[in-house]
Length: 215
Image 1 (cartoon, helix red, strand yellow):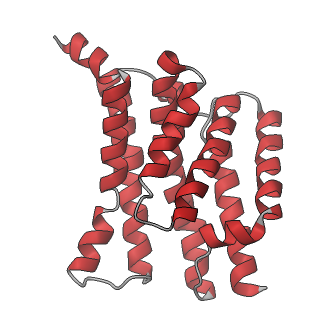
Image 2 (tube, rainbow, N blue to C red):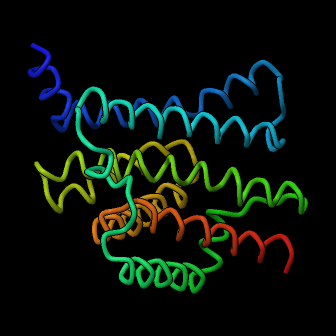
């Protein structure tokens, strides 16, 4: 019975539902805090709540599901060092260069206008937590979970889910979410690790926010 449940949960539809629900509710601490006037939109506490929600629901929970429900190693889902470090470095740098070459469009997607202290907190510490969690659930948990069944189709399927979860935001952001997601998922596929994509994502966000706030 347990084996049947474990096998069923690793099928595409349950995987998509689990990833979507976890990603959707990862923003619940922010919604709760704003609705109960615990903090205001744009406060440091707002971003802390967002990062902590992502950490628990998009990283810790799926990791526990992989380990104790699927009974598979986390490395199978990209939570590991890159398989090919030189290729990981090249792909990471290429992504950063391309992102900066499209600076105005990427600034619109990433920009967080804050003072210097809060800027460092948001883009370095909380940004690292959030991008690792977000990267793991979509380019790790969902992408590698779908790979055995759908192969390369898992690239666009996982990122379609990622983009759809941005509905309600400006159309440009929804479209950029799909494009950016494809890039980072491809890096994850090539290196078998979510880490290079996370580093590229974090570096890109950091540099663009420096340009927005201080240049």
